[in-house]
Image (cartoon, rainbow, N blue to C red):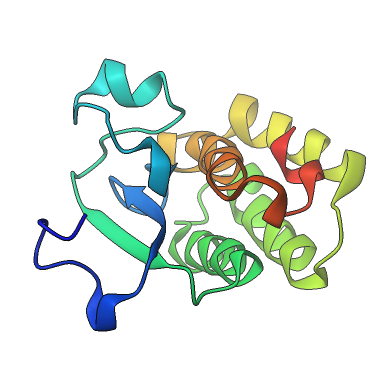
Amino acid sequence: MTGLGGGLKGGARLAVLQVGGPLGGFLPADGLDVALADADLAARGAALGHGGLVAFDDSLEPADVLRHLWQFAAAESCGACSPCRVGSRRGLELAAAGDDPGPEWARLSRVLEEASLCAFGRRLPAAVRSLVRAYGQRLPTGWAT
């Protein structure tokens, strides 16, 4: 990773890499040997999106990154459909609580994936699951469903 852009600031260690924007997904530091191609990223639970890459170092708490993802979703939802408008706010509430979201997240993710009018809402659950996979046991496992 040090060869890309000179590495992380201050010699920090990479924790996760966000691919394709906040809803594109996340890859763990030890899982970066993947082509930046739709099929290869999809096999890892990510999407190319707009092609941006953002490195998160290990000084950030995984729960803070999860909350940031939900804050982005709640702020950027266009509000045209209830699943995304309400669901992104509810996801933020669940993430802010800091607990395992339990079966409510399973229901919410299903509604977002099946009833959102556009890819923004439909992509939210996959992005959350990829973040949980990238951080491993550092986030409540209930978010992985």
